[in-house]
Length: 231
Length: 338
Image 1: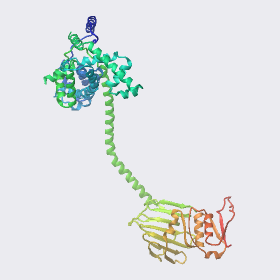
Image 2: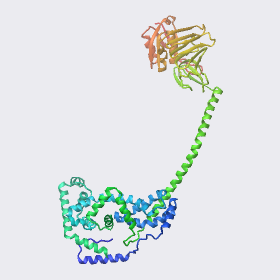
Image 3: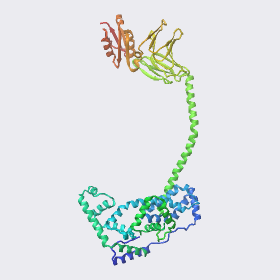
Image 4: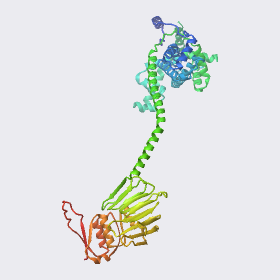
């Protein structure tokens, strides 16, 4: 989805909405093709797959790949990860085809395989984002109200966009410190700078991010995004 | 339950709060079936509520098909191996049996044909060899041993010259050494047999165990004990049986030439064999001399010089004579009175 995240003045809003509608028209939408095959047909395919029939494997792939891809994408929020889940799951399905039981729900069996892969990647993703969460905590004073607002995803993305706007050195040091978890002493050694310089860059970067987040009235931004998506 | 399902859906649709994110993290780290059950519910419900553009995943399908083709090839190879190994397993026993029988038959054939092996050790050299039964033989210079390629019931060897035997113990198959007219019978012992054709006597020195010594005419039949020397005179058929230091006689195995109160005559004959030379004694009086010495790695000149230090005699090397065929005769040393 295109989510224009900029300081929303009226002119920009109109422009963005306009672009978005053009985008909607340009792509060919349709509802996901699920359940267009009866459970009897699927059961026949599963029986053939159990005997090593590659044609049945291809049919099953075509039947389930879209659903599995978008399901994985929703959780992992990465196109590459979702594609790998599809590949890993179907490969595993082929390897474990001897254990298939046509009389049981294939739908649930496929999920069971996929879940193991999704869970591993999701845990990794959440661990990787811990530092990002800490950075968000540092920039915004969360209270009971703001913790419940459903804009967390956009907040993180917005912080990412703001980081891109930082001067090169500040951006580099901020990422090393806040996203990769190095101490300022380690960074000073890595970049051949004095510790004081590193800390000065860091302070400046954080100050910039804080000011921008406050001036942009984040709640408004969220509201804008929600309205925008409902259209 | 519904609350948490909604939380998942909020996360799924990118409309989640900070608290939602923390809760999801907690569920992931719990590693129990709660998350799996919730996600399964979501999966069952998931019909693509959103409008979606179809994602082209045909590349992945092609990739999968390629991978699976490769795997099935590997499977046929392993299938072939399994099949082959079955055949191999069936064949291996008859094959072993066939080769085993062949091997024994070949051995029997050798035994029946009386195939003999002859090993000769030239003058000045010592040879060690292993017999088919595992016994070890050290062959002194100028000696020869003849033994069958495969031993029958009796382990018979024929010896000319001197040899030290270390016989592998086997009471059912006695070990016989035939040296000229003397027969030495042993089962598992260490002994030395001295039977040079030009010597007037045959000597048997027993280092360990027991041996029976008998001659062809059965006039002599002596059970020897360890540490004794038996001398058999070929002409008079007399035997001389005395206690000796057996190690001084078997020292030659380790490259040592040991004399224990030996007469000059004995010293000369043994040195002749040891070094492969010819020694002539000019003066009869010198034969009275007796020597006690041990040589190891000494050259003949060094050895003679050392002998000179204990007795008064002098020696000289003659010029090597050229034979009619152009080769040189072995060197001669002449020992004389001063």
